[in-house]
Amino acid sequence: MNFGFSYVGLVFLLMLTVPNIIWTKNQPKDYEKYVIKENKVLLAFERIGQILVSCTALIFSDFNIKPWSDWSWWLVVAFLLMLIYEIYWIRYFKSEKTMRDFYSSILGVPVAGATLPVAAFFLLGIYGKNILMLISITILGIGHIGIHLMHKKEIESPQ
Image 1 (cartoon, rainbow, N blue to C red):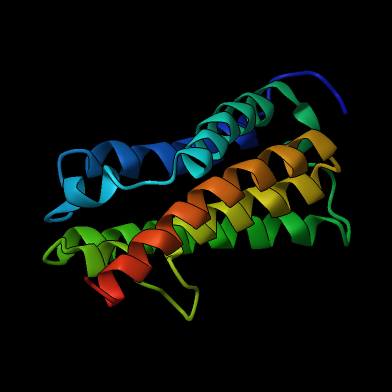
Image 2: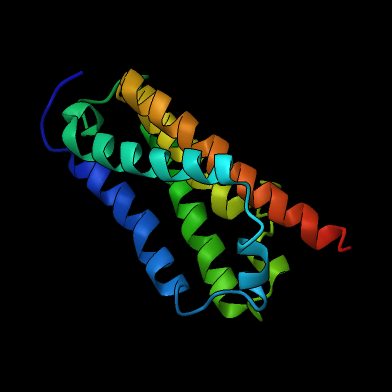
């Protein structure tokens, strides 16, 4: 692992953060009633993972573009997943902004808003051969995808 600023990590974090900032003003209808029921353990995993992933993405130059090799495909696929994530957000912002819209899938990827960036950052970790990113994104993924799946289950089978 090589310490140093990662411009690729910054780009990935911007692609992740900007739509989420816009989302704060465009939350789905009735979102608050689901948030209060979130599993506290999953929430802790999510928050810790967010901090770890954000820091790791920025402070290791392992993620920056290197001369082309077969290994470069990991970065290409990671970036494509982030582009699909952006398309997911565009679709959501154009929708009626319901909970079903928010927890929808895209191209067969379930709960795309959680799954796509987790998968992308995992592939970024593989590309950078950075075990800390792989551990960090696994922690985040357990919490973030877990919470999204719980909300999706609540939506599909209301009590």
